[in-house]
Image 1 (cartoon, rainbow over the protein chains, first blue to last red):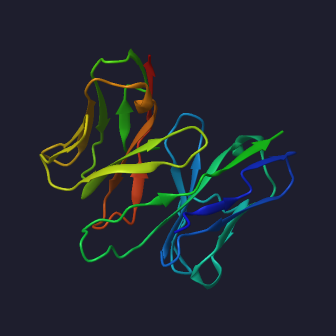
Image 2: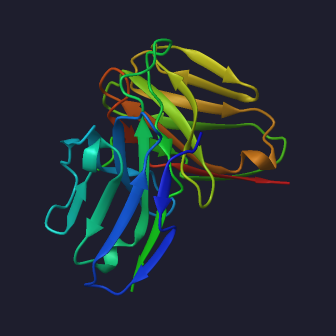
Length: 119
Length: 112
C-alpha cells in the first residue's frame, strides 16, 4: 500500500512569491495534518482535518497561509506571499481516526515532506 | 511554544554505549508516542505508551511513561550507528491521539 505522498520534494522561490504543496494521504485515512518543521526541531501543527473539515487551524497564519482538502482526500497548503522565515520542511501526515478495533490509539503516517527555501 | 521539552537537544556517543533521552511537560497527556526521523524522511512511529508508569521494550530500546503521564524517557542499550536520527516524542491530550503535539527533538549521533 502506498504511503503518504507529497509533492514537490523541494521548492526554491523568491520572497513575496506564492507557493503550493500537495498531499495525497493513505487511502481510507480521514484525518490529515499539515506540520511545519524547522531544522533539527520537532514538527509544529499548522492545521488538522477530519474528512473535509478543518477542526484545528489555530496555529495557521491565516494572513498568508491557506489550506483545503477537497472531498476529504487530497489536500493543498498554500503560502501567498512567502517570506524568508517560511523556509522549512512542510510535512503532511494522515491517520485512520477513529482507530481500528484492536487499537486504542492511532498512528500518524508521515510523507517525506517538502523542503521550502525562500530566498 | 511547544508543550513538550526534550533533553538533551543533541547527543553524540560511541557505538556500544547506553543513553537516555527525556521528554518533559507540565501538561498531562492521555498517551505519548516516540518517533524517529531520518534525514529527508518523515517521522516514523516507534511506540505508543498509554498507562502511567508503563514500560515498553522494543529490542534495545526501552520506553517509559511517567506515573503522572507528564513525562517519558527513551533508553537505548548498546547503541549502534543505525540508531542515529532525530528522536521525537509526541503527546496526545485527547483520547486516540488525533491531536498530537510534538516535542523539541533530540538529535542522536552514534559514532562507529
